[in-house]
Length: 105
Image (cartoon, rainbow, N blue to C red; front, side, top):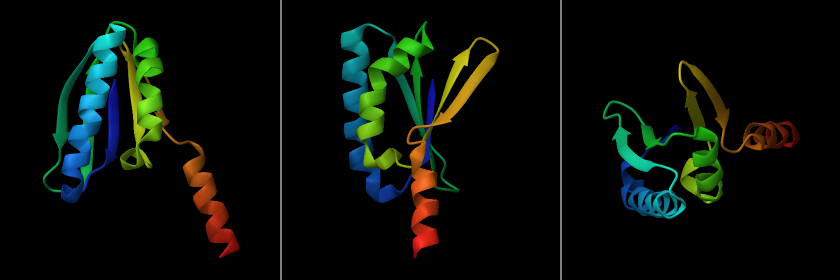
């Protein structure tokens, strides 16, 4: 499973805290492991990688942490099922709420 998010160097300490929280819940639930975190130097893209045999169970265990993190407000998750993938927003209502705010402003 991969989580794509907006990355800013000032958030590095908060990202490390997020990594530790994810690693703990994944290990306690026995659903896989937290892999590497990737930051693109030429942009503001960050990627968290998590591995396990069942992407649905992995997401079920990590989603409360992902959804509660302000760092992932515009983030999206990609779950891999062999050759098939499923990608979706962590906060699917964020774009709709933003659109509503723009319309009322």
